[in-house]
Every structure is written in C-alpha cells, then in structure tokens.
Image (cartoon, rainbow, N blue to C red):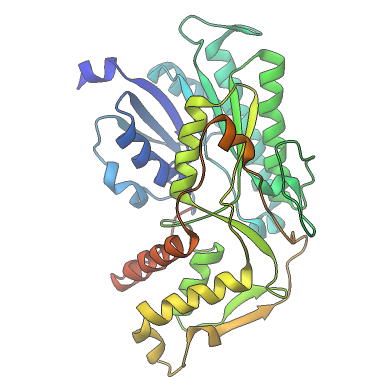
Length: 358
C-alpha cells in the first residue's frame, strides 16, 4: 500500500460526511485511482460516518474528525499528508437554522473558509503570485450556492456575473466565504475555483431538508408543511450530477473563475410535494393504510412563510457547458422516484433516514 500511495496526490475534502460530500467521495475514489482523499469533518448533527460505509477501509481514504476552524489541525493536515488540493463542502446550510442561530453560520461558513484557504496560501505559495516548489498545480475549490444571488422575479436566470444579494444569514455567510476565496486569488494568485449550485436532492440528505421532510412526515402520517402558497420555485439538481460537475471543474476549470452548476429543472414547491406524495402512494401504500387516508397528498398543509423567503432560483449553465462540457444527465422524475424509494427502503429497515446527514 505504501508504494501505491507514493504515486497518488492527496486532496483534502472538508465536510465529506455530509450529504454532497458523502456522495462525492465514493464517486471520486472510484473514478480516479491517482488520488488519496483526506476527509475532515466535525461530525455535527449534519454529518455521519454511516454515509461513508462503502469506503470504510479503502486504501486511498482517510478520515479525520475535526473542525475546519481549528487552524493548528488544518496546518497539521496540510503538512502531514502533503495536501495538493482542497474541495470545501463544509458548511452550515439550513436557512431556518441560520435565522435562529446566525452566529454558528458565520463561524463555520466564513471563518472556516478563511482558515482553510489561508492554510492553503501558507503551504502552497512562496510569495504572492509565486507558487512554492511542487505546488504549481495545487487548487482550492470552494462549493457555494445559488442563494447568494438573492431572489429572481419573473423570467431570467442567475449567471456568474449576477450581483450578490443574499437575503438570509445562511446565504450572507456563503456570500462572505465566496468573497474571501476570490480575494485570495486576486491578492495572492492562489489557484481557486468556485461553483454555485442549485438545490440538490438525492440519497443521504439530512432529514430536515425539503424532500426528506416530505417523505419523513408522510411515512409518519403527519402533516406535510409547505411554506406560504407553495409557489416558490427552485431549480433541482441530482447530487450525482453535482458530483460530476465538481469533478469536471476541479480538473478543467480556469483559476479565478466561478461556474454555475444547475439542474435546468425549475419546479414549484407544491409540484415537488405532490410528486413525492404520488410516488409514496405507489411504494409505501401500507403506511397510509394504517390511518385510513386515501392519498398522501391529503397530508399537505400550507403554513406561514418564513422570513426572507426567496421566491425563485434559476441558474444559467451556459458557461460550464461551453467551457467544460458538463450538463445534467439525470431526469428529475427518474431521480426523484429513485430518491423516494431509497428513503422508504431505509425506513423499512428501521433506519431514521437522513439523520446525521447534510
């Protein structure tokens, strides 16, 4: 194994035990035999090693429990493993939680990103715009969100040139971290890329998120809450399509550039809820028969809208399609059907689907 590791490049993946990270790591290890993945995750409520059972014991995978804000630990990891790339997934990401406890979001999303990228600068740059020996190809990849752009009204799409207009503490903290990453590219010449993605869905997502909540509430025969009038629009991206996009940008993206990774699939929330309920009617009929309800859709309940709730998101993916050749491949209805069945299967096995996942 030692001889094998000498020929591999070590990258640090942060937040790898969460939703997107835990889908990315197995994908990346299987596709690229020339990489070692060092996974740094604090394992808060949003991360669980259960998400990474399939790579447990993998010779090119190593897990470290720790906080991205811990500079001493981050510096140690860079030095000990000779890190040549960073993919930063680590973030607090639930809008409702950011409204209640914004300080946690600022600490993790802003200070954490700063700690990571400053460690990268220290370890990879001899001086501003001059990489150190063996560090010319080192890259810092920051995973962000379309929520930094605010809300779309009517037609049109967000592009990489859209001015930032965050509306809640979560999106504001992500906007702040994006700006820090951009500044390190321009000030120090650090090799950085940023991607802003639309709403992800798929296996291993935390139970508090929109689609897992619909499934969880439905199977529990509880009211399924939908904010406001249910007409808020989101662009849905399957997590594996996102992983493919991240891989493509990590290897092919231009330093200092930002790329939008979108699903090209805008749907009203009420449609998504109704569609999930339709799938549940087919694959989880026995749960609803316990209470005698006719269809899961009978549980849908409109509730008071949350503060600062953006009306619509939509991303223009022209840049990543033209420059890198990536585009989403997974059809929404197919992906949603597979996602619902995954959660139902977990529930049938007695697993609290989504617990401890980001």
